[in-house]
Image 1: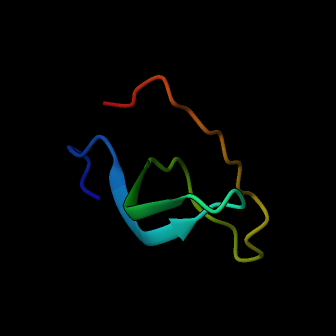
Image 2: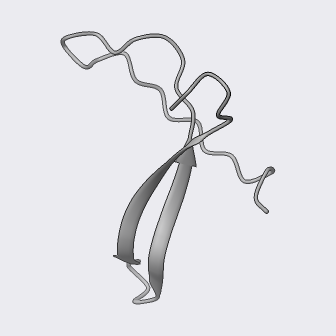
Length: 53
C-alpha cells in the first residue's frame, strides 16, 4: 500500500457464513497504522461499515 492509497484490499475469496449464506469473491478493505510487533500481539481490529460504497 502506498502512502497515497486510502486502503489496501484483501481478496478473501468465497466466504461462507454460519447461516449458510456465501459471499462470493469477497474483498475486505483495511488500513494499518504503526508496526506489528515480532510477537504479533499489538493488533486491534476495529470494524467499520459507515464508509461502505
